[in-house]
Each structure stands twice: as structure tokens, then as C-alpha cells.
Length: 368
View (spheres, rainbow, N blue to C red):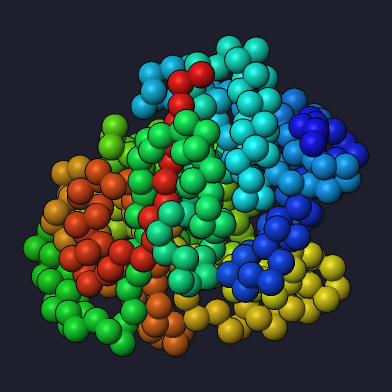
């Protein structure tokens, strides 16, 4: 077995490895191969801000990992090795050898810790290792992995840093919707706010409002800092194909037009990606056009309310508006998260509308 650093010739092997590892698993969702190849080319070859490794037995791939060094505010260091896209066969020897080489490189870069898993650029995308909730296919931009990954990582000496929660809400099982709707209407009237959808004709202003809410609502409880305006614009641009303005909601004060809260949700395009096999060829494009009409689930990926309006019904009103749009489109299943386990405000808000825990994702760390 060899541990090799990914170069231009090996990027395809890095991208394709999970297809074999998850062969026959109907819950596996491939990355869009063209997009991932472009991302890796940029990170590994052009910017050289990341490195990637493959564990190989001859020409056979046994594992992969991508990593970089950046600031970690929870670990109070500017030199943390963040790793992502971890995949491995169920063999501790393979895992340990690959992570040993990753740690060796990261130490040379000055890293003091390793932490993961995260997606490059966007820490809400496929964040953490799935440790609970393997019974249902993952929704858009959430992680899915082999159940033995927790044992591999803890066996290497990594410890739990934090868990994040994904909640589910099935409308045919919710008995409190009418009560929740009445409470949200009362709150909107009493505290004089409304719920708007994003307006494409004034998208830049709406992005600024979303950013303002995120900056005010971000605390030490939330794992990452609020993204910059440029980063937020980049995320919106990257996700444009999957966005529906009716699922992009902003609560605003009627008196001042001040943004008070946001909920951003996406239709579950992972349903489509599974059918496309991760390829945007002619067959993939035809599949995309056909299957996007069959989406029956929505995932709320962001929920923020400015501090002075928390616990005043703003989050509830945002979700009620989201529910109304879903139901009008014949969609009855929602997942929301991921929410840090110690973020009581957000956890209580989503549970108050009848949501139940669906999945648990784990972030790991280790001093090196």
C-alpha cells in the first residue's frame, strides 16, 4: 500500500473513488463530477491552498482525504488542519496510514490541530460525519458516509468536538400546525413585522440584509463566523440552479424595513443528483429536467434571527411561510439544520413547531 499526493493525473481517481466504495448503496449521492473536478483543480493546482491524498494498493484506491490550514476560533489557533472529503475502506491500517501522512504534511505547514470534516469554502455544506440517522437518504448538501467511519476516526485518536443536529418535520404527522400558525400571526401583528421572499430584481440588497442578520446573530455558540458579503454572493451564485425565491425568506420590520431574521431553504436536489450519477452529460441533463419536477422534500439550511427578536415568534413565522409554500407545491417533508448541539435557541425554535431529530453529524478534532 502507498499513500500518494494527488496531482493532475490523479484528480479523476480522487473524484471517482466513492462510486466504487458505495456501489449498490441507494442512499449514496455522488458529487457533480465536473464541478468537483474544477474545484479540486483550483484548490490543488492553481491556488495550491489544499493538498489531497490517496491510499492505493497498486492501481486500486482504498481511501482519500483533502485538507488545508486555516483559523479555528473554537480551538483558539490560526493553524488548524481542516480535513474534508474523507472516504476509506473499513480497514484501520489504511485509515491510519493515510491520516499519518496528512498529519505529517500539516505539521510541516505549522498546524497544531486537525479538525473535520468540512466542505471547502462552505462550512454548512456536507458538514460532519453522519453518526445517527442512516435509515433515510440524505437531503441536499448534507453528509452521508459508511457507518464505520466513526470507529475509524476515533480509533485514530480523534475526539468528538461537537455534534450538529438535523431535524425532520412530516406534515401528515404534525398535529400542532394550526396552533403554530395562529401564534406566528399573533407575533407578526404584535411586533409589527412581515415575511418577504427574495426579490431577484434587488438581489444585492437582499444579500446585504441576509448578511446583516447573520452577523448580528452569529455568536460563539455558532461554530463558524458569518460569511463575508463576497462569500455569500459566491454561495448564491454557486447555488443559483437550485434556488427558488419562494423558499428564501426574510423577516422585516414594517416600521423601519430593518431585516430581523432569515430562513433559507432548498428543494432536495439530491434526489435528482442520485438519478444523474453525478454527470452533467446529455443523459444527465435530460434526467435533471425530468426529475426536478418530482422533488418531494425541502431542506432549510440556514435559520438566523437578530438577538433582540429571538423568542418573539420571528423564526416561527418564517417557518410557517415556508410551510405554506411547500404545501402549495405538494411537498410535505422538511428537514432543517444542521444546528449545533449547544445552540438552545435554534434547537428549541425548530422543536416548537413539531420537528423531531432526524440525524446527528459529528465534528472531530485532535492535537497533533
